[in-house]
Length: 413
Length: 219
Image: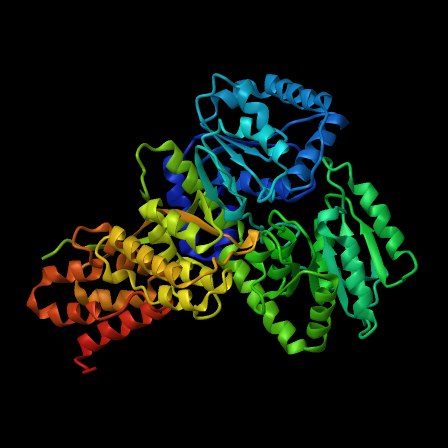
């Protein structure tokens, strides 16, 4: 049966939602659609693509996923793009920029034929953004999908990247605040989680307990967890500070779980800082997990009492939706995409400081009925807004709008 | 006999206009020139957005003025703007401008929002789905309304007022073809205020109105 995946989603989201996807996909049948990013594993983009591509294929769309490759200098440059787009003033040498362009050109040589032949190309984030200029005979529509918080970019970096982005047919941002001045359609499409992925499927109590045991966590002490890359914008040191303020009042253990992404050379430096800050406390568990430890992260989230995402900048923060899907309230930084998911006082709390985080941790751990009520609301909020089916519907809508003539404000199917 | 009523459903794809405002003056200036669809979206689009509470303010302009500019007076005035009273979006646009200018005249200080709390002008692309279900007669409409999605309610009861030349909802337009017998039902539907409630509440009021008509119950 070819409809297995959609049938499984239908059990979660209902018949009407899947019916909408099928209707939207009808005019897109057999279209060649290619997604391009820079890593197959690690980070939210790769996770979304792992699920979106097979779903599109099941809907009859000829979807593919290509990954560009580069050397250490390329990733050093794109990491600086990432930091610069999030507002940190970073300089990038001409040598690094030349290497960025050459890397895109080299990748274009490998991918050119299929990219130029595709009906729709999704380019994810800045790493492959320059591919477009090396595909002059392209026939399809090209969409730049930005997953980063670019609300206040460091201008020289945005100015450099804009010259590539401006030539796309459309771009997609996760939040209205991230949209830029560009001469094409800019859609606002928040990302999503997949309820059927290893990271989000239901787990048995035994499996959750085995993970608690494996990492020597105390099953009788409340667990607070932050899952994220070891990245300054995720503020892991602020999380440790909040934990230390909390444990003066209530017994608690902290788990900081994360992995490195192949395109993030800074992770190791931040991880060492975290290990230093955590060194003398047996209740702080710093777990460096491999990129495919999805089931382990799932179990850790389910084993936790509540979840932190104390980011100071966040494109979206898929870990927030993941935690909420497991019925956990989230205490999150009042920034970027976290604001979209953490509805203050309903699905969790928005905070600005380690002190604020500590206050809310104490409140929820001392008010179990409230914690459970918020967790329940959090799960239903994700069901309605942040599952992959909604994400796919919006991608398909954009694809249909871009490939049909004179759609205007209303796309009738 | 009118043609069978084809049930549709809809969803919105949100599109950024690239325009934003950080104070009332900028809000006014952008409202003067912004795409009609953006004004429509900021009055009606919130109905299809998730929310937990009854909204304190009924449109995005009022909510932003209250929560980001902290101007309660302006927020209260803006929140009483009812878009159903304006036949054309441009009339609503002008009323918005007048209200804001009145407030600008009476205040000495221009209040500013924080940089990350700006008003972002958005519009939407409506994608319309065919549910492949049809209704053949008014009685069937009564049985069907309780099972309609909120997207269907939005499309037929709200979006229709902008989409159709008569500027009225699809249910009334269709029922009119069945003759005088259904005029009381049409009047009942016309009396429902589509603006000051959620789509779920709106669906409940539609159910009650239709049921009252068919059971002959007096309101």
